[in-house]
Image (cartoon, rainbow over all chains, first blue to last red; front, side):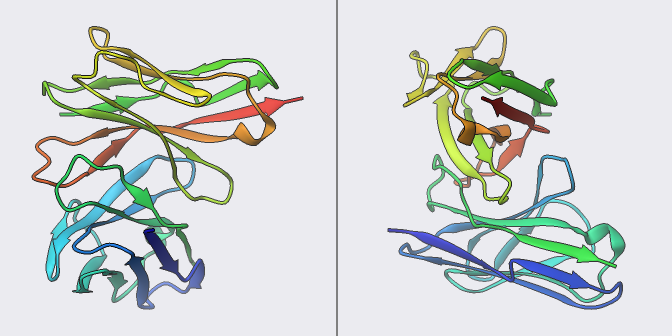
Length: 113
Length: 117
């Protein structure tokens, strides 16, 4: 069966520090991968998605970037965090051909101080 | 532009009663998909139910059913026989179009459901 892992689960970082959130999927190949952000009390906003290794699409301009160095690995990064980067970050995967259910990881809660 | 609207920030229901969570959507596409997710306090998003725009029958999954009214562009979630464990945030979502073989979802702002004994 397929599983999705995210880490770290919780992160407290000072403004201006770098960020790296990691997501891996097991039990499937060539998944579509997604990074969503949820601000406090809000819905989810799609940040990035990827349909293959090295293929990243950005949905909103921001202080963050994403990379997919391996088929089942998706990384969210920042060189210098802003206060507004605080939130709950969720990684998700779906099958490669569309028309699938999106399955989410447990999420990473980032607080920027 | 596609949009999902959930107008109920919070709902209360007594245990064992049924509750309806509202969702309306806006799209000009003929083919689309609608989803409901549950987010407990732990934060994980749990898929509940799916309705395709061409599905003639309302989707059902155990105690969950989706009241799909295409002409009204509504996709309300009905939870029957509520349980204390149903207390959570509930999000309605729509698959973006064109999808280009992806499953990008647009989410509403959510409804917080609280089930009391």
